[in-house]
Length: 110
Length: 116
Image 1 (cartoon, rainbow over the protein chains, first blue to last red):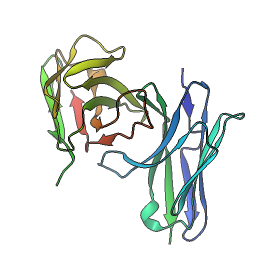
Image 2 (image 1 turned 120 degrees about the vertical axis):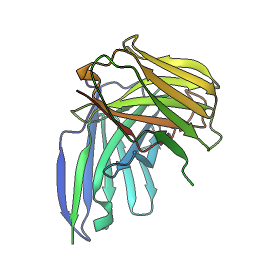
Image 3 (image 1 turned 90 degrees about the vertical axis):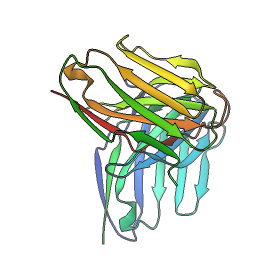
Image 4 (image 1 turned 60 degrees about the vertical axis):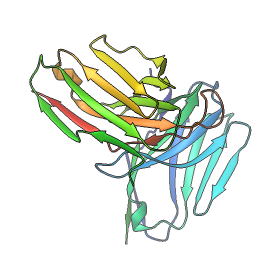
């Protein structure tokens, strides 16, 4: 029973353009939502988070949007850079437990 | 300066063996975790310790036993290894008390376990 879904396993974007990664969830009982980035043979690294009481949080090139009525979360990266190529996981904080989606592999082409 | 380290990075072993994976964090965090990433790439929490006390124990077979000798270390011991245990195991740590804040967790590089 998947509480967090990332329906696009992969995404390819041209350098300089916007990357939009999406995440849907089923349970509304979450306080925080997080995005992690993972390079091959490394552990996930924290990117950005958003509280459930907000609808937007921005940090440099990264912006996370939360649409609670649609139970949808998205991460915008603009402008995209080749170094952004990685697997991106959304995660929901449920009482301290992080529940992860299955990830979207982003490829940014020069 | 590695924040969260795991040993070994790769582990290949036969079915039925017992093995351990070690994790250490030098961030001064109070809470540590073990996650399993299966073949479908899902990262799922297995255990969490706060100041050496077990606080999260997901539905994990009894063959898996975490041990925290101090708050900087969380080891994972697996008895009677099975084929289905093959996965990447990640250790993580966080400073926040459970239930407060986003609970940003810092992950180790992972241990790829292959059971033959």
